[in-house]
Each structure stands twice: as C-alpha cells, then as structure tokens.
Length: 409
Ligand SMILES: [Zn+2]
Image (tube, rainbow, N blue to C red; front, side):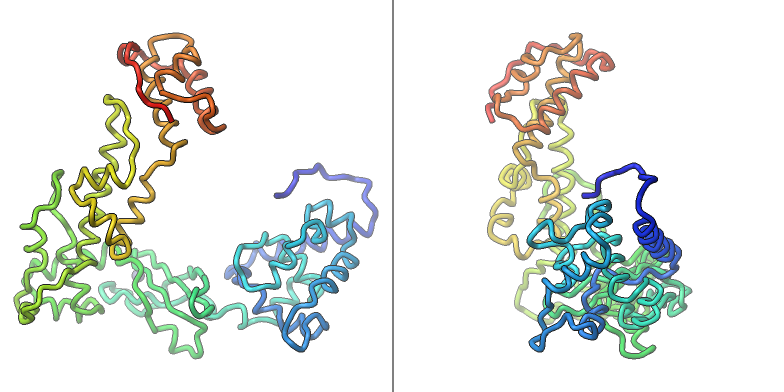
C-alpha cells in the first residue's frame, strides 16, 4: 500500500513541519501502554465530526466536504508523499474511516484524520478518554476459578472486536495462565469488569484441576462449581481427552463418553439425544490426524485432499455432507487442510522434485510431466517449480525418476 520513498531534503518548510507533527503523533501512539481501540474510530470521532459540521441532520457524513477540507489542510504534496490522497479512489480510506468499521485502516491514516479533526493525537486522547476504551483501562481480572490469582487484576491484554449482530464491542481478555474469556461491552460500571461472557480457552491450570478432580472421584457437579463452569462443560471436557488411536471412531468410545457421571443422573431421560458438540470435538481430532496422514504420505503419489476423500477415509462422508452446520470445529479444521488446485499442484511439484533429485539440474519439462501439470498453471506453481529447480543441487537422490504420472489438472 505504501511506497518506500527516500527522505527528500529540499522539501518546503511547511511540509517538513507537517511531517514532524505527524511523527510526534506516531511517537505518542507507540509509547502508549494501553493502545486505544482505533479500529472502531467512527464511534470516537463522531461527536467531533458533528461539531465541525461534517454530519448532516440525518446523521450522514458530508464526505465530500470532509475530503476537500482534509486535502486543503495537509496539501496534496504531503498526502501524495505518504500515499494517502483520499481523492485517488472512489471508496477512499477517509470514507472507510468514517463509516461503520468493516476493515482496518492503516494507523498512519487514522492519525492524519485525527490530527485534522482535533489538532493533535494528544488532544484527541484527552477529549475522547472513555469513549474509546469500552472496557476501561488495564489491568483486568483473570476469571479462571481454578487459578490462584482468580479475580486478581493480572490481565493486561484486551482485544476489541465488534459483535456482528448488535454492533457492540466485544472484549477478549487473555491471561498468562492460558485462560481467556470475552464479554460484550461497553462496561457500564467497575463491577462489569468481573462479568465473564464466553470462555474462549481454559488453559493448562484449569485442565489440570479438572483432571485432578476427576481422578479424585469428585462429582461433575462439584467440579463444575469449583471450576466456575456449568456441569455440561465439565462433562464435555472430562471426556474430551481421547485415547491415542489411529483407526476410525468406534461406537464403544462414543457410548463411553456419554456415560453418566457418578452423582448426577443424566441417564434419567429415555430419549437418546445426539450430542453434536461432543461428536464435533471427537471428529475434529480424527479429521486432523487423517488430514496430516494424507499430506505426509510422501512415498505414494500424492492425492488431493478434499472433503470427499477425507469423509471416505474416516467413513463419515455423510456427516460431513449433511451436518456441516453441526460440526463447526471439524469443518474449520477440515477447511484449513483441504487443498485448492494450486496447492495440490505445488505439493505434486515438490513430490516430483524429490523423485528427480538424483538428476542435476532438474529439467523443467521432466518436473512438469512427472507432476502432471498442464501448461496453464498459476504463478505460485511456477514459483515453486523455479524454487525446486534452483534447490535441486542441494537435494539428495531419493528414488528412481522412472515413475510416470496420470494427473492432468
Ligand atoms: Zn489467569
């Protein structure tokens, strides 16, 4: 996005002054302990935009006026120098900065807008304190009931995103003990700091405590109370650790995993309910193992990793086709392993290069033929071919290059 330009010494004084103002803002920004959440800048600057006459009675931003004034304030030369002339594109960074946040704006550009509106970044911070920190300032409490530092103010990191349904800020608090939780904001009082929304990760301290409670024969309900979660969560994670195995899931395991605990009677209900969350968890583990195995089969001719192939290998193709919506964890793992045509071609190129590594230098046509490539492959595949040819002198002979190929993609 930004061009790298050498510092030009004979710039007009006015321009140099402006640049050093911006440098001052950047300096202040990087020195802050608690970075303000500039991602959602619109909320913070809206009152100021209104004060300055850039908001219509129907709450729309006067984009054209704002753009003209900002260009006038900095001058085209400077904006061009830092590649931030908002008149250069129709949906410019300036328009995006003043609309509901959909994508991140480069902080330098945000600083440009802030200085234009407030005079300096310092002034902006003084004026907007509170509105840009929907969860207050660090530190925040760790709400991991299994940790000794429970409720102590030990968390210094809070990532703020936006709830896609309500548009409200969501803070995610990550503790060094591995526990993290999120909460929808903004906080209305200090007490809100101790309100925990969703738990994102439990971490080793929490898991070890759970394991210990289970070994001690503690009931799920008591364990849940001590760990600060509901009983179902304890049941889920107490059984979540699957024994090492390489074959497909056996019905025995599923049954065992849903067996009732000692003190609470979840077998009361005669209706057999599929626990999709548990199934998802178990399946995701299996899917990951099988995907890794498919990609690691380096001796055999590579096969493309697709949902169909994987579903067949684990014998659960119908689940993956029909119940994708009930298997979010599995599907996200699967998506990260499934290959595009180019990715698969790249893997074939590497495989073919290994087989040709006895030859030096590797001939391009041989590599293409063995990898089964048609001439219209993408630039990234070409890059990989060039890399393999370039590296061929470093590789040791692997196997005979006589194998032929039947792929055509
Ligand atoms: Zn903690």
